[in-house]
Length: 437
Image 1 (cartoon, one colour):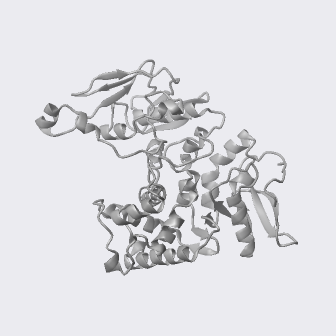
Image 2 (image 1 turned 180 degrees about the vertical axis):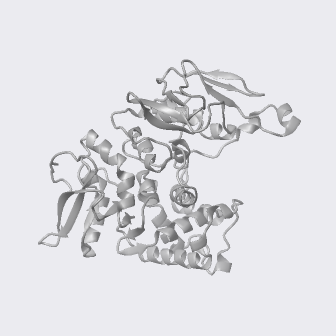
Image 3 (image 1 turned 90 degrees about the horizontal axis):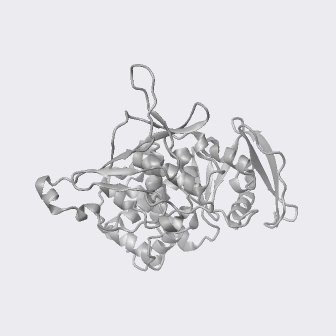
């Protein structure tokens, strides 16, 4: 299939219907023949592809490569890939299908993760090194929270592996982990909800658990992490975004979905072609979100402000209340929301002007660099008195209403205030300040 070939979709998909791809080598063995069929998601049997999409409006090079690899392996059966199976020029269909993507990837028999066709001998040997360490250190029983964060050196000698400094085998492994797939925000949901997944590097199969486990080892050991950054020529922000993916993977397996803002905060710096997708890509793995949260008719700033309100209010549900009005429901009875000042500081908003967002919206998108913690700015007399950091309170004011009926207090619901009508009041022992938008 030529990447510049024009294609016209039929009628928009309705209900829980999806398109699936049937692939075979063309008669000349140098082309692919691709046919699309429509089936009900609840009845279909298929594999789903996870890849870093190219910029072509038709079929990007990465998708074309993985389709060719499937044909080379003589694999049969239907495949789902978003760039082809969703009409990207129809916002209504796109909204409906993106709301279903969690179900699509969880229903797939297997998710095939494509991390490039360029396979070197050092890639293979780097993966063998990772597999060797995984077996020696009992990677099957890895508990992310049981490990320490002291960032000491990894003892390569005692584990029988070479020192990472300018070592080609480690470089082959680092080369796999810097693939653009690890930078793409959509891959998080695709990976986390999969029944089963496998990574392909050309003709090489890599076990997902091994790759993500060794990513955590690199991220948590000083000598391995430093040599990874040296391998990519000391970037201003570490390009080990595979660490975000790996952390989310192990955490999700243990704790399940978190609130949308907590989920977003774990994947800062990851990329999407459409800025709205920075939020929509994580909706399916976040808690307490009505499907209508995903809506491509909404602007980026509308979505960012909505999530900002949810973050500052604390764990509300996004839902549709009678009359089709969007609302937020509190999980707990309404009271002043208490949150850590460090969380506010880490997600301060230096990029908001560039993102065209109000200053009060927490920046959960941009990559962050380590900096000073807020406690350092507190007046020392308060720190000397009891050694505890005072916690601010945040309340929503100006026209906020809480609705309920009956004698008992049910989950509380309030309509979402319009952007620009919020006043945030932060109070505490040390800090009293009103922040307008």
